[in-house]
Length: 353
View 1 (cartoon, helix red, strand yellow):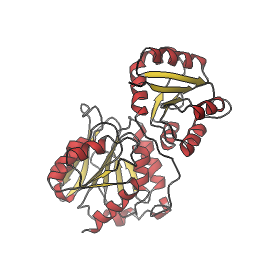
View 2: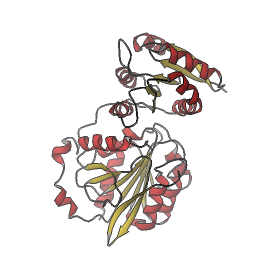
View 3: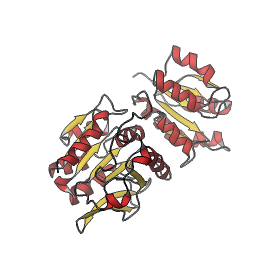
View 4: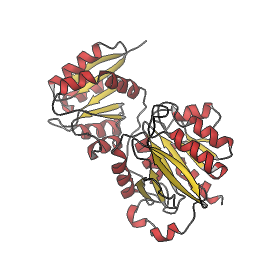
């Protein structure tokens, strides 16, 4: 079996040496080169593109985010960001994901060598997972229904008066930050209420929701327990907590609660989808986007069997065709569509009445 070829760009000699030592102990990974900054790394990467790039952000000559954007604009390479600037909930981490990074690993400013050695298993697994991704060129959101963003948001009082009788639930993982942004920025302000689960760590989701709120015509917020699903609003499940859909007095709400991981994830897409099957049945639309693993597939099958509409992102436009693939294999999917057609499927679902 061919080993996964890794290239490291980090201005710390300690980091480069430690990574080399860590990878030497894993037969599935091979370090093919390293550089202290992007200017030196660029010609080497162009000559011999690695399977995965491990990239710092703070470096002399050119910062890692600028380099990442250049890579994703020309010849995308699966990239893992490893930086002291990407601590939990930092805007820099979200900027890296938005720029096309597959994953983000936060490293401490002190005790770095010890941290990397203790995190050997997590880091090597992240690199292996990232290598299976197929990153796409990242471009600015296309002008569309949400191009005027906040200025186009309908007054909350108007939308609150419109009942949500057809909820939309969405699940995503690897590559999902960009995919969800692509879908939501293509929607008008008066779409049905949506509940979204994205595999994202605690503290990241609040800032991610704030970012989307500035880009979308719909209002976007991190969900709180008891929030009502309203037209024109998207609720993002908080990292580290499960989100379920509930129905009372003819209205839909979300329940946010702790609990063990499901399919190794918390929040879990399956938890949301199964709850939507229980309380919404055939009235709901479920969408599964890019992601590794099978979370959401069985929950979508439960929805499908009860008559809900189900849509999966196609393989060509997925960063990782894992979750959609598993849902398709289970016979849980009505339609398989490219990412740029997902928004129109939501609009069409709403228009059916």
